[in-house]
Length: 213
Image (cartoon, rainbow, N blue to C red):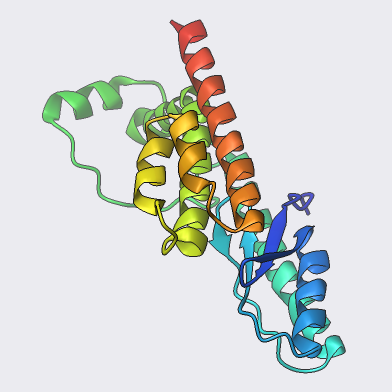
């Protein structure tokens, strides 16, 4: 079984930061708050995607830990299956291959069928090559999406949200910083962190693109 990918999560009670770290750590601190009677809405985000994590906080601490461990195990199994399929590669087409219709012009099919291994092997090789060449741009896009998703959920009703979003996508850090200044401190600081990651990935993608020319 492949090694489980390390992920970082950040939890909020309302607009207050609970914790940031591994899911188990953040979820336990959120559970403690709820069990103490904290009425603030609890949200835990996966930092890499900006997506809230669906957790069931009901029951005892033992029951909660059991549900959390089962959730982690299911995700690890799914990721292992995906990794095994990826490793199978073009040379082992029976493992994990999904058949779908592809519409191409006759000259495209003619060229594909003339390649060593035929159309299917050639298409898989082309896709893998395209993935490698666009890795930096894809990473930058995912980072942008993660930052914007978190902003939309946590700051969508804040003053200046629409303008700050435009400044973010226009890569205007000074304007962006001015607009988010009135936001609650913990939300503002986490937004800054996600936006900094997105900007770094954008710069790296641009650098990789220049070097590849």
